[in-house]
Image 1 (spheres, rainbow, N blue to C red):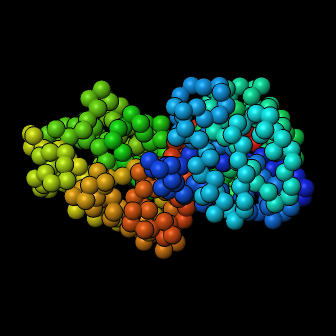
Image 2 (spheres, helix red, strand yellow; image 1 turned 120 degrees about the vertical axis):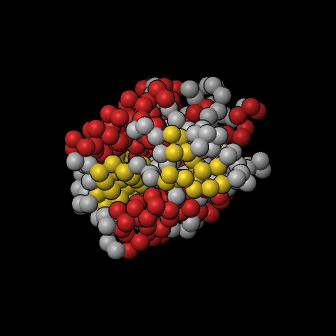
Image 3 (cartoon, rainbow, N blue to C red; image 1 turned 90 degrees about the horizontal axis):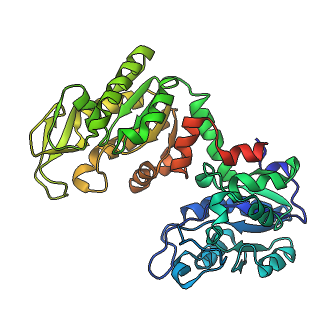
Length: 404
């Protein structure tokens, strides 16, 4: 894999696709700088190697426009709001161009000197970005001498700046930044080089969202632990009574098929045995524990309970490779967070014992951060959708484009 360490950036302009799609509050201040912080080492390294940097990113989902700059309706999606944060985290003065392919933008990128940084306006102010327009990608390519893709979170999109632009750079003038390289290496380690026992923990609300990943993991994992709302579709498929718990009735046959496939492949597919149930979807609801196969009418399962936690924790602690995608319950509510928290602690404990642990998907990452365990696992992925698609497909458009 070719990274920025392989290329000479002296007196070169590095055009870097970053993922600065960060949350802003009503005062347009960055409320979570994780993605900017993640890209900072790539930016700093290129500057230290004598290059200049042009940053391009999207932010949110602005209304359809081809104006290129922030209209009044799209003001909240302007990347100008993050300039000070990027400057603070990179230690460099950051200039801003209010149109990613405007005359001013090209003048500024052409005049960049080593050590300088330019941030282009939101790529999605042009509808051509998401359409993967070749002409738009070619225009963007004029900003740099070397193309660096460091936006794993968007690598599964065949957009102009992620999958199309790379064709306008020679093979020795395109590479991955540290975020992309770390993500790809970590996923490859789990999917293609996993040390057994390999345990995958898959949670979330719907089986339909995780069908492909469960099927892919069946050919690789020794254990698959199911949690979250999706568990109740499996329970009902096996004849259990689930009260008013979340269930996809049109996926009951699919759940049965997945259970049969796991058995045929010799994969241990674990379904929760007990649950924390409530009479209402609220933190202050009446709560009790129940066998997961006999939840009373009018009650719903919102977390795994002690028996399942004990079983899952033992499996996790005896694993050498761990992939976690999706919470065990409604962990955003304190009454239903214990299952997710205990799984997170078990992963941290297994990592301490020598396991390789990869955390991916927005909710799993949020949980690891909520319990301050990010430093106690092997790798926390920045791209939920990209991670899942990489596992499902074996590669991503943004990865293939750089490797071509």
